[in-house]
Image (cartoon, rainbow, N blue to C red):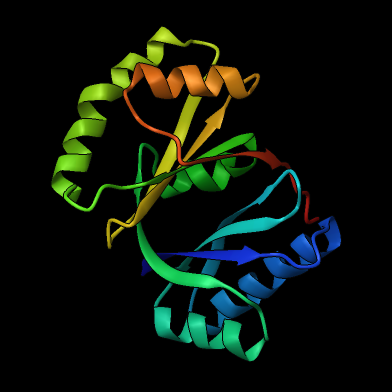
Amino acid sequence: MSLQLVEVPLDPVGRDEALAAIDTVATAAGKAGGALLEAQVTADHGRVFAVAEVDDAGALGEALDAAGVAHEGPSEVRLVGADIEDVRARASTANYLVEWDLPAELTMDAYLARKKANSPKYAEVPEVAFLRTYVREDMDKCLCFYDGPDVDAVCRARDAVGAPIDRLHAIEPIDRD
């Protein structure tokens, strides 16, 4: 199975639309021979970031298209800084998401080496917990999830590890039960 990132921009924007989008991605993942691993919603309810474990990324995209959902992806991603079982157990603890549009010259090996070398520097900002990153295999961008008290603290954590922020989103916990 591979991990696939699907981003769903929402229009109209709203909590109900976000929940419906998550359910649609979960259903599409099932049709693609897999399951939804996690879904996060921006606090303004304008975008859903979903990661699914699927056998067939093409089938995931086709199922989303058939459902009439506007989406970006699926794009294969690599999970860094956590394992899948950790994500299943703690996916809802993230309250901030940082997007970094990776430089064209950066390779996956260089990114992973950089991440390993700089991760201990998160200790300089103990009030922020780095949770996980999804790096797109095409090296277009990465999504980094954090648990922190506020935007300023997350920015300090990114500064500590020397990583830029292209977009920073507050994440709203969504209880789908």
